[in-house]
Length: 137
Image (cartoon, rainbow, N blue to C red):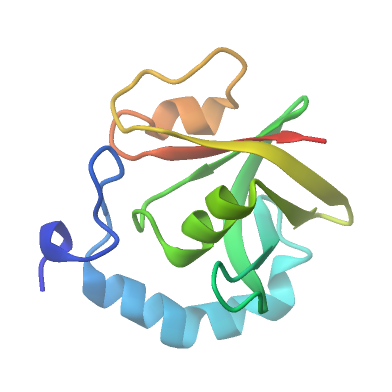
C-alpha cells in the first residue's frame, strides 16, 4: 500500500512517511523509545482517550513548544491520537518533567504557511506536512 492510499492520508494532512515505516515504528521502535522518551529533549507523551471506547491511551510524539503553544508535526498523517484529541478538544502532554494540559487543538494543513507564534521546527516542516497545534491551558 502506498502512503497516498493509506487511511491516515487526509486532505491537507498528507502521510509523509511510507506505511512500512509506520508499521515498524508502531510495532518495534515505540517500545524501545518509550522508556527513554521521558528524558529525551523534544520527546513527549500525549495522553488521550478513545473517541468511542473512552479507553486511555499514551502516544509518543515529538513536540515543540514556544510560549503557550505546542506544535507536533504530523508525518504519519491524521492518526488515531489526532482524531481522539480533536474529538475531545483537549489532552494532556508530558514534556520533560512537566505535565501540560492542551486545549484548543487545531490542524494547520500542509503548505498553509502556519500561524504567528509557531515554534521554529514546526514552521520548518509545515510546507511538507500538517502541524497539530494546541494551546497550553
